Image (tube, rainbow, N blue to C red; front, top):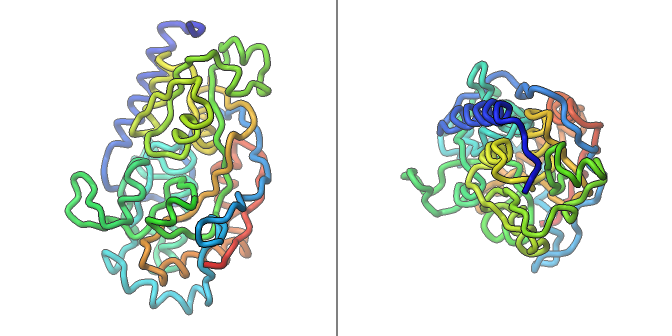
Length: 342
């Protein structure tokens, strides 16, 4: 049995998280001015290590993080990049609405905010001259790949409902078979989140590892993610509790239904920012290099996106986005270097 919380605090925390999920349930959204969601408190999160992205080659002999070189400037590539846009005058982006600091709906103004949102707005500005020439379509983890493929999403009529996916999506070899990826724009790692009143945490603090959880513990994890794949393959002593929306894990955690959550440290940082009783602990269990998903055949848009990322590395805007989101709750991390070759 996990340590108990006061019934009053559980009800308040669960109600707060449930309200956030209800706000996040809308399908399409109009973004506001670039900015980060406003979490309630700074989390106890260790700085992400400057770990190189995985270098094991895919079947084509290239590392998973290798993308297609821009081959030109933003201005030179803009014309071709706009030719296949679904809406012509707007960029359609699949993203999350419940990942605080990355893509979450601000309960005060209803606008999507976070790292991925600001990055999408920068791409729209460079592509169409207006950061708000963008339509966000809220999708969950399992919908990220189908949103860029020829499969039809539930409730959608078109076979390709978005131009890009910015949704804390890990680049890996298997996913390259279905979609294309930009160069890596953030290097994350899978960790675990526990309560401050967890006996193992009280004993070890931030040195606690996932293996300190009792055998058979239920761990909440988003379905359709690399996180659940790793939990099943490497940590079979635990029981995965899969949910379609990562925000549901916070609800279960705050209600006392699960003692832990596993996911990317980026996502867990947002949870800890919302709950001062939550702690992100241990070393990273994996490397999670994030890439922007692009339709497999849209090489022109892919090259353009990589050109934008190149400019952002040079002009300091990547650092500015980081500082206004993740950087508010953890020390600075290095920008991932671009790798090309596809």
